[in-house]
Length: 172
Image 1: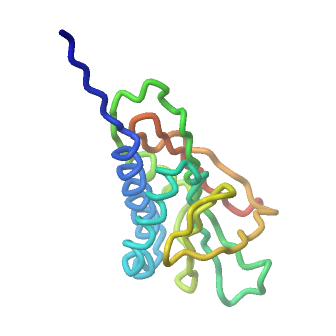
Image 2 (image 1 turned 180 degrees about the horizontal axis):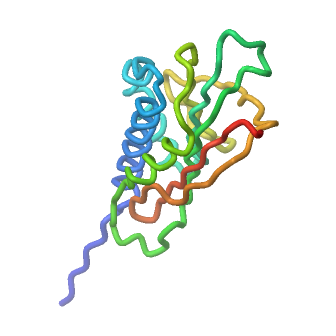
């Protein structure tokens, strides 16, 4: 007689990666001089949506848009950080769960801080057909024309899930 055990790590990995991305965003927000109140006040809604869309495989990325509310719409983007999701990062999904806070710290150092008047928005890039999550709405990303994207590489994994990190700075 043989006995087998199958554990569905995707649910656990989705929760871990959702929490890890939010922790990474919190580290970025604090490290670049932004006010963490927005993130703190919406943590539960953000985590619920991110985890739901990771579980359903509709989340393509999580974006932190930093903007200057005193500038004209369309010219108000100051910087941006992107976590891009890879659902096949580790095909065997051995259960390894980690967040590379050093990679996030490196991105912060390379990016630098933002002026005190800047604000930010957390945007989930989802694929069509995603389930609705209470507290989330649709929006349009600000243009990154005139910005340069810098890739840091993989910042976290959870089972077969991976998330890479990149940041945008204004081109010289």
